[in-house]
Structures are given as structure tokens and as C-alpha cells.
Length: 224
Image (tube, rainbow, N blue to C red; front, side):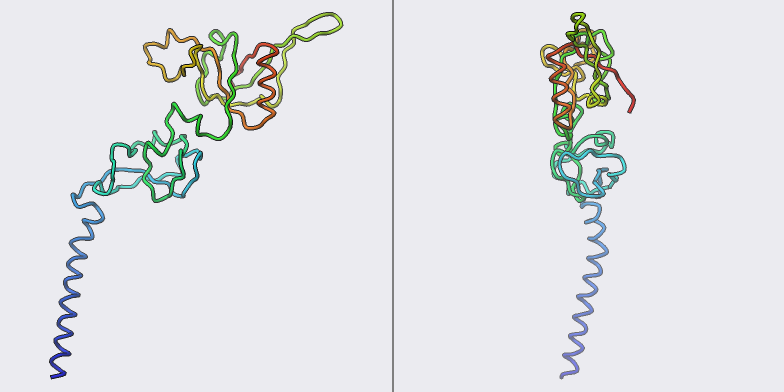
């Protein structure tokens, strides 16, 4: 009797094992690729990053992810060009799928990148090199100020070392509209008026404010 029960137990164990193997062979591939078998190209980070981190090409990797497990495929980014050189709006885990609501776009990148923003008025902006610069360009800031001397008031060009290399965040019109976000057909009518620069310390802010209220500001576009 004991022998029969023992054999019956072995038989049941073998049947259960067989069922598990069948389920593993049939269901696991479907779990991996999605029950529909359709996957979508997405991007994930190789390492988790905090908010306001600039995302570079070497930080991301392409992954084929089951479409069935993507809650909102419309916001998922499948083009790496929309990710590279943008910033994280929130903390992003390396397990997260990179989506449009988690990173900046070209219009709001300056708001999330590290550093404060200071706007300066450039009197000859529309006719100078400042009229040709765009967001992300690096510039050197010069001041054209009036200085009192024994011989009288003279004009002097100054170039504070703190302002030798600043990044342009935005170029704004007199109506405070970003020139880089205007429709192409309106470009000919755009008159730039204010340059918003990204500053990283208080000395830079102080020097820009001094120039803004003491004279004219000129910008020199420089290479990285």
C-alpha cells in the first residue's frame, strides 16, 4: 500500500513538473514580448539620475519593450535626438522608460538646467552678433560704459572676467516672446530685444546688473 502511494506521489510530481515546463515554454516568450507579440523601441538610462541632469548619448540605451506593458505609448520617446542634451525634469530611474513628461524640450530646457537666469538688454541686438545667436550658444559679455576722468567723461570698454563665458538660455522680443520658438514664416519680422543668460554664481549676476544699469552691453559669440 505504501509503495503504491509513493508511486502515485511521484506521478503527480512529474505531472506538475511537466505542466510547469509547458507553461514556461509557452507563456514566458509572450511575457517577454507582450501578449500581442508587438514591441516598441524605447530608451532607458544606464544609471539613475536626479532632476536637472543633462542627458548625453552615452547615458542612454535602446530597448525593445512590450507594447502591452506601456501605459501611454504616445508620450514615450522613440527618437534619441529628443533626449540627448535635454535635462531631466524629475528623478529618473534606470528602470524607467524615458518619456516626454520626464525630460525637457527645446523650449523649456533652460528652466530645468542648473544655474540661474539673468536677462540683459542689448541696445544694438538686432544689428549685432547677438541677433544671430540662439539658445545654447556661448558668449563673452562686454560693457561700454561712461567713466569720469580729470579730462572729462570718456567711454570705456570693459570685459569682466566673470563674464568671459556664459551660456545663452533665451533670446526674447520686446513682447517677451522666445525668438527660437517662433514660426519660421515670422522670423523676418522678429526683432530680438533681451538676452537671457545662464549664471552659476553671484559674482556673474552682480557684474551683469552693473553693466545693465551703467552702460551698453555687447556680446561676442565664442566657440565651446
